[in-house]
Length: 115
Image 1: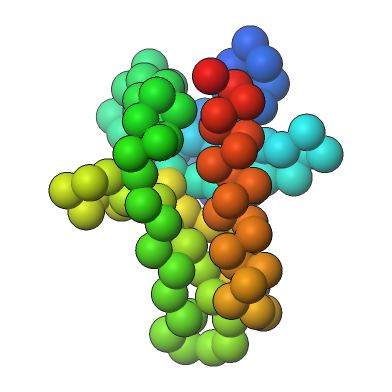
Image 2 (image 1 turned 90 degrees about the vertical axis):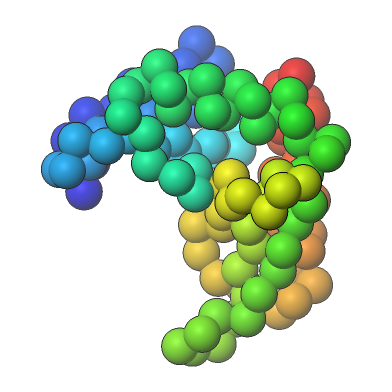
């Protein structure tokens, strides 16, 4: 559960501090829905913001991995670096594989529009 939330100047990126003191970013679409979260936790707000900035910058080189949910129905996506490091992930599972593909494509488009 987040105890602190900091917004960037666009209002599209939220950085939350969890009870354990680590930080994660969340990205919002224009409709206000959270569409992605950081795959890693960071030691500070600035570190989390820099990670999101790198994600935006590197978006054209990233690959999406879509996987079936282990204990249930549905599909989730993860954006990963060329070396295979997970950088961002979906916040929910999708009933259909095609819907999951569309969701990650929309997130990548959001990243491109912000750049």
